[in-house]
Length: 237
Image 1 (cartoon, helix red, strand yellow):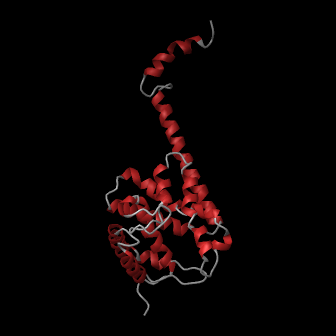
Image 2 (image 1 turned 30 degrees about the vertical axis):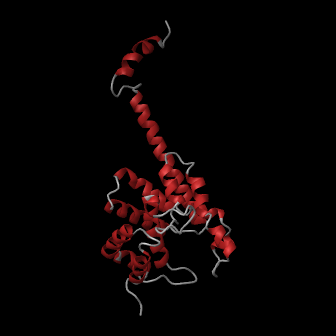
Image 3 (image 1 turned 60 degrees about the vertical axis):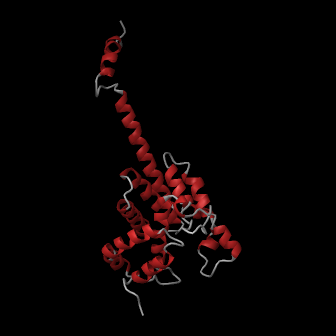
């Protein structure tokens, strides 16, 4: 008799037992865990690539991820969408790796031709992120994060609620962060001035509901953020 015969004889019984060594549910769980781990590794790898290209910093991407989830919570998005918001915040500018450094790092105003090329980065980002497993929502948020509430944004010219909510959230928080962050060629704006500019653009560039939600969070929670970055929270007159 084969030495494997006893094992083969009991295999059906073991497989049918919950938690058995051949329990298919355990295998499915293992594969799901591997997929989650692979997605996390891909996100970290591409975020590191952005850092190497000097397109963001770890602190920048981390606070955008935190703010996006906070706004999503306040707006009542299901918890299942929080991970999508976090990934979008980290990778929304991944398409800029397809834009020449001479444009990305140009300290002067871009020419019309250069600006047209810069405006391609959401499409480049979508082409990358859509290849990630289970990132369909994220890819559309990346694609549309430069749309405007009044329909004058890009690349699709979407208007109002035609724009995915995740993209509307990223648009507000990324614009705010860009305004308050210092660059080699300029100092970041004080928080109150950046918030004032968000309010002015509410209803034209930005979703008014998202702006109001983010302002509430900013006014309650930003003091520690601005202390860490060395930026004032008040307008310098």
